[in-house]
Structures are given as structure tokens and as C-alpha cells.
Image (cartoon, rainbow, N blue to C red; front, top):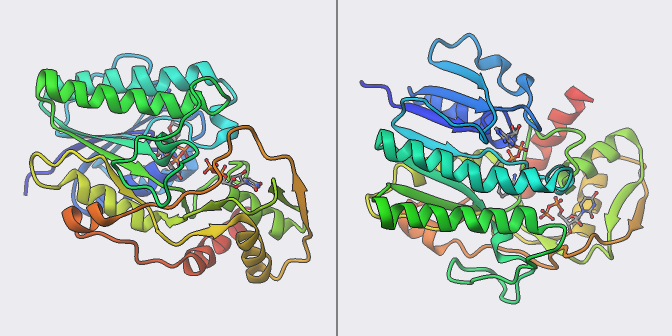
Length: 312
Ligand code: NAD
Ligand code: UDP
């Protein structure tokens, strides 16, 4: 068997490290590129001895020269506190990162997959969200560096396909959780679990009635790989997420019950432009990729709680 040379940008991050692991299991030759802004060597330490795994510490804002057959472009901080830490760099990472990886794909004739996001729908007026919905995004708010950066990256992907015939695939990832999220990640699942395990107050932003749909990381990675290997000409964008929908209050109560925590719920101000509802329509993923999530929220939370117990 000829091993495919696969580049994963952002490969030392939460999702990227799970993807690298699965790609190696399937017999690929994996190059993981990351600047370790939010990623960690600990996420990939268990892969370092594998001769078909290489780690390159590199910032995607610099040119990329790696011979490869497939590229998964994940480099970009994903948690609001991390992408808002240096919003100008976040915008550059999405846009220049897309340009650099697309340029590489063009030169190497590689197939390239972009990790886009449900954030392209902004605070959606249509519920649930199909891929055809064009979104309701604030162009100059505190989330815009991420949302508009990812929207521009999608534009560049489709322009590289139209103008240069690059073989693109675009997925829109909905809230994904699981082991290897950072304990200081700031996203809701990791925050609630870490707070519950430490006996700290559980911080609900706003009234807790806003909804999200949570996908376990193993399900997502399976969908990503199916998309990468999907039929020629199927570019997406395709939603990848779990259609189960929960309020943040329901999530907080579930985490408190499952951890047996004595933590109390407290309410804090809702950040600007925080979407009120989010749930994917996944008919396209079902049809084209024969994919749908298999891990229920409660089962995924069991594994994630076990992970955080082992690291904090
Ligand atoms: P993460 O922060 O754990 O991973 C992002 C990785 O990119 C990190 O390892 C980080 O160090 C690296 N990175 C950031 N800027 C970089 C740069 N300039 N050069 C090189 N590497 C850089 O987040 P994640 O949850 O694993 O997200 C991975 C991808 O999936 C991101 O592109 C994110 O936008 C997308 N996504 C994630 C979710 C989710 O719920 N987890 C939802 C939608 C989209
Ligand atoms: N959230 C919360 N408490 C926290 C962290 C987040 O109530 O400690 C809320 C946040 O306001 C949002 C939802 O949980 O409504 C999901 O937030 P997250 O940052 O995980 O993802 P995103 O908003 O990007 O979907």
C-alpha cells in the first residue's frame, strides 16, 4: 500500500490531535504543523515515536513547503477567549493560512479540506441551519475576527477551485467536545466540567436559555475523513455536527449530576453577539458521506469527565 502524505495544520490542537491519531491508524504518513498557540505537545506526545508521524513547529502565516497528497487546514484558535486574545492575528490566520495552504495544494496537486464553522451562520434567523442559509453575521463585533475570517477562507477555497481547479472540500463544524480540550480552553463543555470537578461555581453566561448542539470528537473526525475521501466534485460546504440541541442550563445541570458536584450555578453577563440558538441540518452529510453522529451527549460527557479527572 502506498501511504498518503497528509498535512494537518493545527494538528497539535484538540481536534487536530485526534485527527492525526486516526490518520496514522489508517496507515497514512502524517505531518502535523502547529505554532502551539492553543495546541500542546502533550496532545501528540503519544504519536512522537511513530516513524510515520512528524511534528513541525511553524506558524501558518509563514510560507509552507511540504510535499503532500492531502491537507487538512485546522490552524486557527477556536475558543472565543483565545481567538479574541489577538483578533488581528486570528483574522490573519484564517485568511493568510487559507492562502498559504491553498497555494501549497495548487503546487502539489493535493486535495485540501477546510475546517470551517457553524459561526459562518452567525446568530441565525433560520433554525435549524442548512448549508444553504447564508447567515446573520456582525462584520465588526468581537466575534467577527473569527466569523468573517472563516467566511473569507471559504471564499478563497471556492475561488481557488474556480480559478485554478484546486480539489477542495469544506466542512462546517458545529460545537465539538471531548478529551484533550484544554482545562483553560474557555468553551462551555470544558468550563462546566472543570468547574464542577473543582467545586467552583458553574458560570452560565446570560439566562442559560441559548442552545448549542454538541458533537463528540470521534464522530467529528470520522466525518472529516469521510469528507476528505468523498467523491470527486463534491466540495461541500457540508455541516458536521450532532443535531441534539441543549440549553446551557440543561448542560450545566447534566454536568453537575454526572460529576456528583456540589457546585452552584451562577449567572454572568452574556458576551456580545453570542448566538441564541444553533443546530445543524445534517441531511447532506447523511446523503453524501453516509455519516451521522453515533455518540449521545451523555456518553461523550462520561469520557470527557474521565479525561479531565485525569489531568486536573
Ligand atoms: P484548538 O485551538 O485546540 O486547535 C487549533 C490549533 O491551531 C491549535 O493547535 C493552535 O496552536 C493552532 N494554531 C492557531 N493559530 C495558528 C497559526 N497561526 N499557525 C499554526 N498553527 C496555529 O481548536 P479546535 O477546537 O481543535 O479547532 C480546530 C479547528 O476546527 C479550528 O480551525 C476551528 O476553527 C475549527 N472548529 C472547531 C470547532 C469546535 O467546536 N471545536 C467548531 C467549529 C470549527
Ligand atoms: N458559555 C457559558 N458559560 C461558560 C462558557 C460559555 O454559559 O463558562 C456559553 C456561551 O455564552 C455560549 C455557549 O455557552 O452561549 C457556547 O459557548 P462556547 O464558547 O463553548 O462556544 P460558541 O459560543 O463559540 O458556540
